[in-house]
Amino acid sequence: MVHTSPSTSTARTSKRENLEEGGVNVLIIGSGGREHSLAWKLKQSPQVGKIYIAPGNGGTSRVGENVGIAAIDIEKLLQFALDKKIGLTVVGPENPLELGIVDTFRAKGLAIFGPSKAAAQIESSKAFSKTLMERAGVPTATFKTFADEPSAIEYVRSHGVPIVVKDSGLVFGKGVTICRTLQDAEETLHEIFSHDSKQVVIEDFLEGPEMSIHAICAGTDFLLFPVSQDHKTIGEGDTGKMTGGIGVIHPLPFVTPALIEEIGETIVQRILIALEENGTPFSGLLYPGLILTKSGPKVLEYNSRFGDPECEVYMRLLKGDILSILQGSVAGSLAGLSLESESLGCANLILCSGGYPDEYKKDLRITGIEEAEKIPGVVVFHSGTKIGNGQVVTNGGRVLAVTAMGASLKEALDRAYEAADKIQFEGKYLRRDIGAKVLR
Ligand code: GLY
Image 1: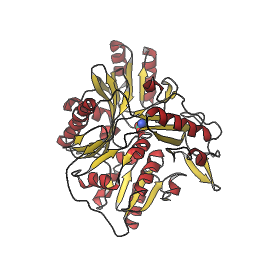
Image 2: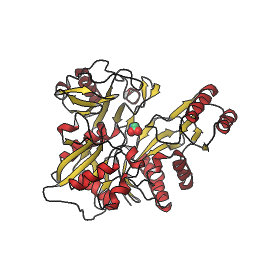
Image 3: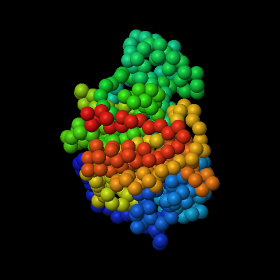
Image 4: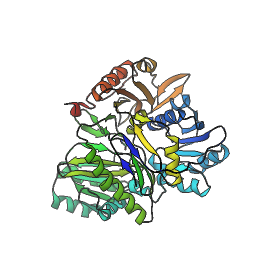
């Protein structure tokens, strides 16, 4: 049970644990802007001891200690956590969750923030997720699941376009295609089935503004972060290929307290109850991606971890200590905890390597980060970077997350763009229309 409001989400009292002498040692798994922002926020907690990030990036190495273990190398991560007396592990990306890292760590008595492998299916299997949504009465697009190409094509031909085709497995935000012609749909299905996918979900196309919801969960208890909006395609005007997400804004003017109440009840609580009744109770971070249609909010997908680039905005906005909130989720109760966020505007602009989400160059020198951070309200998180010969160089498609807070969204965006323009690397690309629709 929880109470929610636009900037504060509160629950009941309980005691916290895992406080060790010298603070709780924390291991953060992942290498993106999300993990840098989590490390940055945890570093502010007087209760946190050492922070390790595996494998981390050029920015995390300045907040804690990077550890050269891949996010999916569960056995090595487990041994590291045991050796370093890690009091809390925080899992960033979805792939270690799908591989069962939480179950493995819990079996050894280690505290780890995230859902079990079974509960993480809410993201790792679109077929599982859509079936559970239907059972729980969660508002979502009508759908059908197919395990072979001819039946899927027959369905698309009889249904017509536009239609949405989703690879059922994990494809890092890029497995969803909006098909506007039959040819598009048939080519997409052919492409998915010719790889190793075994299942495809085909659903009705929905229209409206998209929103990201983030809930810290412990069974059926949850606390909501404020609503934000990501920008998913590489091109301006929401055109071009899908990316992992390249620009986030908060607040959204059309989000009212009544809408948040409705989302909490129909989209977060219903699925948490269904997960518990299914024998797969959820703890960790539940991130429903929504669309606000004329007939109300509908779920596009559930994710089982913090969004990236949303997490950076939430860590900037969050007041108070995140450690006790993460520990509450791990301990199975959010009683007495609250998530309080600044009532300010916040923007996050992702600086990308030229060519992303297709091929791009690496090892290009980055300059201007310190200058950018002199602008009021600006913090730059690293994503695809590393330190090479003492310099920060590019090491991925999404390179830096330039966040800015302001009295309004407009001020936050102005500051973020000013900061983004101070940073240089060969081929740097960013969308110039982040938040433009909302501001209009
Ligand atoms: N906001 C995109 C993602 O994290 O999936």
